Image (tube, rainbow, N blue to C red; front, side, top):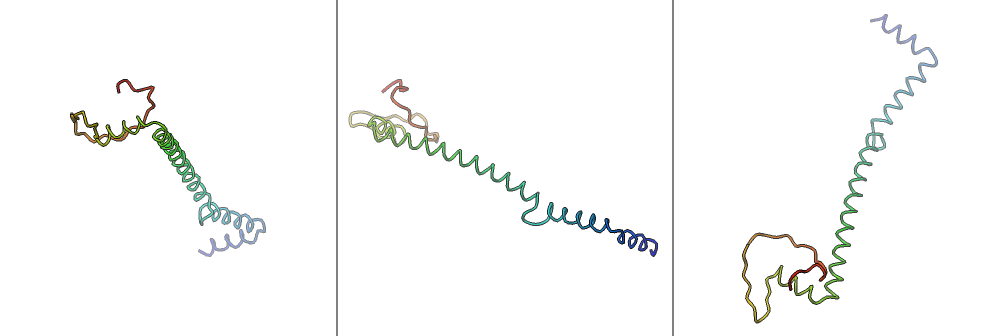
Length: 118
């Protein structure tokens, strides 16, 4: 035991080993411990990329919804189409037959150019 202690004291007495040891401990603290460590930095970068993907998704949804609102404000047939398809409304002189009761997700409104039947 005393031999190991003598070796440690001898190493500690060397001037450059003190600085090497302090530097290694400092790098370990900065790299792996604390809020500003390298590991925390990598986690934050990953979270930022996930949030940027969400922003892009919400921006695309917003643009699609704005286009639908614009179409509803300018085209009365689009409003009639939504009323017929989503809310099963009808004109006074027609009947509606529901062939399927499956829950459908709302589809984006398309312009009149893509409609095949009115």
